[in-house]
Length: 146
Image (tube, rainbow, N blue to C red):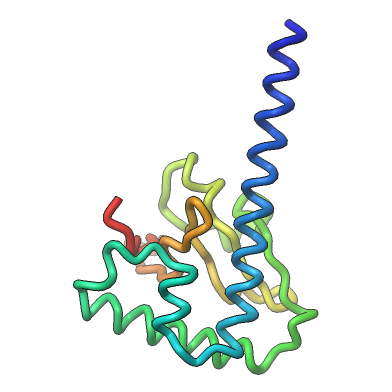
């Protein structure tokens, strides 16, 4: 029983450390997108790109969203930006269709109380930050093949 408890504690610590790493990556991305105009560098540094390179329509959508986000972030002080896990965000913002296991891979970016961005990530790479409307609910447009 004691061994099970120790294993559970180590698992929780490892998951928490991984989540903090992903949140730090997102914070760095939010900083870099403001100062970095080269979208190709941002894509290679932060995004899962295995489904992007050969799809010019998807690439154009991502670049347009990055430009829009860059414009929004230029207008707000960095100190007013906060990041919340999906489960900790207001219920009104939790309108994304996804399975429960994916919810632990979604971070929400706020300016004060206004939702600026939803990010789907895995293994320290952004898989999506584009939401498509499907029957009044949001669906991530996943950039990755895997």
